[in-house]
Amino acid sequence: MGNIEDYQNGHILKSIGRALQTISNSAQGLDDTPESIRVKQKICEFEPTVLSFEKAIIAVRSARTIAIGERICRPLHQDSEFTESIFLDELAEAMTEAGHARSAGPAEAEQTLKTHSGKHPLVMSKVSGKYLEICASAPESCVFWQAEKNGVRCMKRQQD
Ligand code: SF4
Image (cartoon, rainbow, N blue to C red; front, side, top):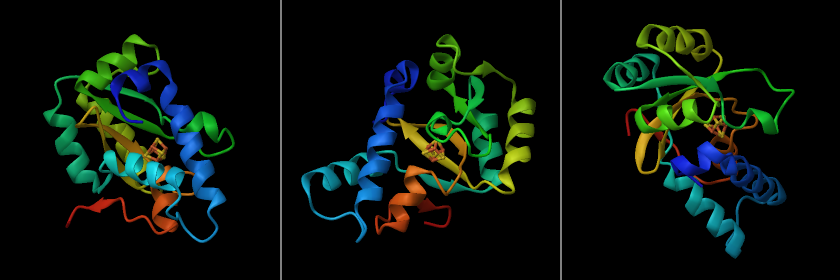
């Protein structure tokens, strides 16, 4: 999981769904089976980082292109609260082209982050090796938060 093409063609959803299934199957935490090792490796490749609102704004203002769209994993959790993600640069262009997001300026992106950031921790992830996604995450269904809950320390904190 984790490249721009996967986001554009929707394959990322299958990867997230499979990872969540592996996590929920491992009552004792992710173990050393080949599937668990594969999932841990894939999750850590995103280098997810919990961001403050202020740091997220800096990232948005530094971007060449911005797009806003429903957070990627929400179709897997239709009953969960609606939140949006900010996509940056090449990912913003790809998501807009695919019709998964709309182009936006920094002011709209900042407003979106402001709307969601209180209840939803902001998580920035690497896609195709660059930090291009800022998600107003839903911890109860987020693959990163659920991995952490199951013993995989995959998320960086700002102070890390
Ligand atoms: S909630 Fe977590 S898994 Fe879902 S899109 Fe956001 S960062 Fe990714």
